[in-house]
Amino acid sequence: MLTDYATAAEALALLKVRPQTLYAYVSRGWIRSVAQKGLKEKLYSREDLARVGRRQLARSGHGPVAASAMNWGEPIFATSITEITEQGPRYRGQLASDLVRSGVAFERVAELLWTGTLPAAATSTAVWPVPRPARALAGLTQTLAALDAGDNLLEAFAMVVLMLGMRRGPVAQRLQQGNTLAAAREIMQTLAGCCGFVGPAQAFQPLRKGQGLVDGLMQSLAMAPTDGNREALRAVLILMADHELPPGTLSARVVASTGGTLHSCLASALCATSGVDVGRMYGRVEDFLGRPQGRSVLVRRAHKLHAAGQRVPGFDHPLYPKGDPRATVLLDIARARSDGSRELRAIFGFLGDIRVSAGLLPRQELAVVVLCRALGLPRQAAAALFALGRTAGWVAHVQEQRAGGTLLRPRAQFVGRPAGH
Image (tube, rainbow, N blue to C red; front, top):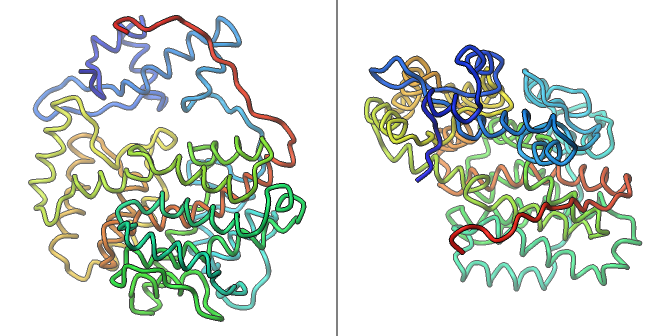
């Protein structure tokens, strides 16, 4: 079985380079490495080794360049939405973490992504008009409740989004209406209500008149409407709003390039995000952390995974070799909310220990899970918050792709029937 990590000897053989070159790649942040407990030799990410290998191959022609670009490689789109920097994502030139610290409402950040301008506001609250839930949607949410939507929340979100679109009429009619942003606001308000499937009521909780998205979320998740809870949720939504071209965003752009409706684009993005390596990564982090576990247990568990050549879920983002800045912001909020919790003290102690012993740095998935635990939220809440926040960015990418007017249709290189088939 192929492991997540390679030994130094395996890495050198894969890349056909000298040790000095391998160490140079590591120092530049091109290849992630982890320390092994009690051993001097480090392990190297096979994913990164493969990516560097494709870069080497790309020098031989355009085909390898394109193949490399599809896996954390060279940029393939020009965009004016989000720039990835060492300080984290910048939305239309504004650092996401600065938007969190300045108290900007999430709705205003969404409008910034969509229009390129941060709407002026005298306060930190922005409220969109709340539509009346459609009768057809009420029937669908009842069906989802019977299907235990909480355990399949992202797929449930996709179904709801498609239903919202289909009740607006035929595809051609919806595309001619030109009300993308009004539809986007309705979708996000509805998804906030759908978060009630993971709350105590396990049912759709529509926003009330005059409620903002964050207040609607607190209602859906049965959270006390405190300033602390409000600020924590706002931070998650803003920091998750966009991140360049992960699978969900790319899926939304592909469907947009074919002339798909906003609802179809967002449903495809939600489905692409529902896989075990994206939206369900939060569940993998939950499984690793357990409930509750001591600090030393978590450290041993992490080293055991490394000894088996496997990754520890929720650590080391390829775009942030010095650490995911989004995780830093969210963990600081969680630490302030820990209130002496024994479980959270153990988790934060583990994070310090594993950074020293293995050089692992947390990424946003782990930070969102830890913050959700500090807020007392259920297991599925982390993925729900991620999807709701990211919807804002998907809408912006759909708009940008439509403006480009290009059909996204890459080519494949036929290599014959795989051995053993």
